[in-house]
Length: 158
Length: 286
Image 1 (tube, chains in turn green, blue):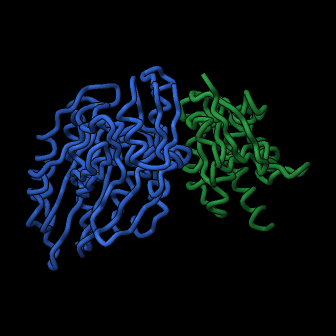
Image 2 (cartoon, helix red, strand yellow; image 1 turned 30 degrees about the horizontal axis):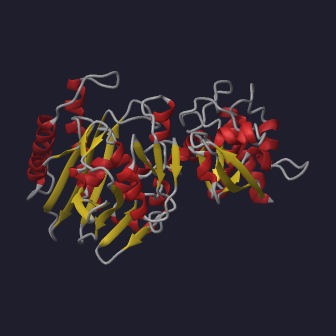
Image 3 (cartoon, chains in turn blue, cyan; image 1 turned 180 degrees about the horizontal axis):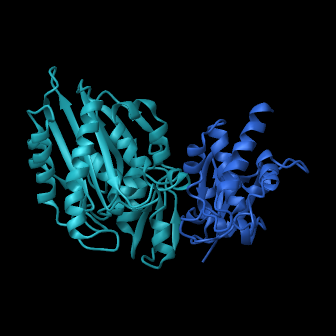
């Protein structure tokens, strides 16, 4: 069976890859492109650990076929920092200790980024709804919500 | 498995029509990929419809709105005109899953996945939506309630694809609403749901209504008797009682881990009442 040749943009760089029809975007990112930030938690779109931004919308990369990435713009957690400078969300997640085991963190960062890009001044309720597609079994969510609130404050001031 | 991304609806329909083995349409993939991963389906061919021109658009037409089959539900919520005209439909579509799911899932996919608990479907049935179907033969337009045939089954023939869902322009003093019961605050599947759409006369009397229930039968139920119970009323207590009774009487639900038969029958009436009141208020009734 022949592969499917795909050209896409990931974190601003043009990327070519060949994948099988069954492969998900998450498989491609992790196993073909070495971008292991997005994690496979459930594999069925419930946990959000595989979240990436595709053409401006946060999606579960486990529910996107690799072939569907053709011509898209994809953002992963690897593209959040600029060089050595962390994104304010990353800084605030560290400051607030908004993670323990860390498996859910890339997904939370991406979902929080998508949320703040759309709504720079969300209420606590909007943050909780906005991150409802991301599961964390360690933190109890409070520290994550506070980190996002704090990051929003910093980003507004910037 | 083969993956195809045709650029025209004709090509897409042709691929599906001549496919040997199992062929599936891919819109948002939030049901299809989950079913593939669970080994519930093993497609031989997937036809991705997102590169077909026009299918990603919500068009405002002289007759109302046309929502392309590949439009993600999030885009329905971002369309101010659609939200203003059909708030109940948009609310229902936006209840499906998380932001991650919203960015991909489509109302047409929700319809064609044919779950009795699909959130957008009762609201669309109450709204009197029509479905444009492209296929190997002529295009046809049918009432949306004609599409689901049972859990996981539709009335679409081989090679047919839903191209768009159409919603009419609103007469003055119209409103719609959708409510579902779930045991959590969100991220769940409807245990029971109700959609109500109504139009009032100048005095606040309901002159037309459509009532639909979800998750209480193998397919969404359109209930003319329930609608009749509120037509001619100002949604007084007596009319609401009759509405609830007609809804409960029509339910043919199953018992499952999410709710019992008795619970679903009772709650169907309660939700229809509440949805009717919201729709009435939205229509400008007092």
